[in-house]
Length: 393
Image (cartoon, rainbow, N blue to C red):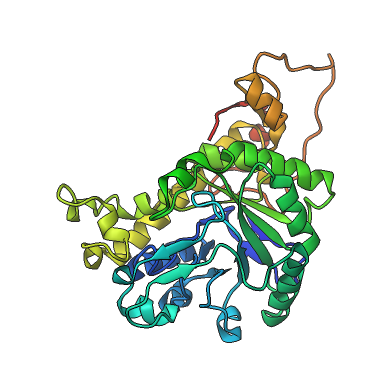
């Protein structure tokens, strides 16, 4: 299930699985222990972690196999020596749970090492502007992309954006800027401390955002050169596989990973405190968070996550993730069918009597089948495709 992010980049990001950690910022969101555990857990399965809007945490970078650094709209983590530690740069334009709004973190919630790394003077709060000072007009994004590509010597440069009603206009700006990847955050995405009205009432649902983005990138003829990453409420192997079938190149998750890491440790907080007190930088139980146990739990979660996806791919009679596509899906209602262009469940599958489909040869994205024998692999290829029912996620 090898996945390449930024295939045309000088130094593309190559992951072992098409699932990665979503952006969770140190200091402005989660604790040091959580960031280290995510780095260790993702490294164990050969995928990437993401700095989020917080500063670069040296211990996180040291344990991460693949590190995506968010280029935020603030003033921190922008030095050349910091940028050069990244395996990819993600320019933060917006996110699903807060749209493109600015945010403010009061001084009392920023203390200790986070204040130092964020370069915030004592007694002052943190302001995260709604826009980048160097991006005043659409053409400025290309200048930033080119500069970051030069500074980092060719790692993939992408943008993180929320999915708005004017999604195609935003995608066009990214295309014109020459980005290597687009991280699209659907309306079901989570965050820490976001205004409820932005979390609940802004942003396209993830499935519709993904479908529109895929359609537009194909229309513009850039789908093969710009990687599309999707996130926002995705938490199961089935949802992930459906997203990939619809055209995403990879999926990123945040909330699901937090639950996976803490599920054996929640009794350290509950019933007197919520589980989040284990994970947040300001959490009262953050020191009780066991890094090694969390990293192991995350590794197990991601391994089982991918193994379930392999089971589904075999059930479709296929041996490669690349062969799974929208033809393997059916929509349960007309609205979903219209938006995704997926066949409606009530429409018969048209066939030509006497015809047979060609067998695809395994490719570089073929599954690692473990102990499967050659006979079992051949049986998989001969099995008729099983259509997976499509659910809104």
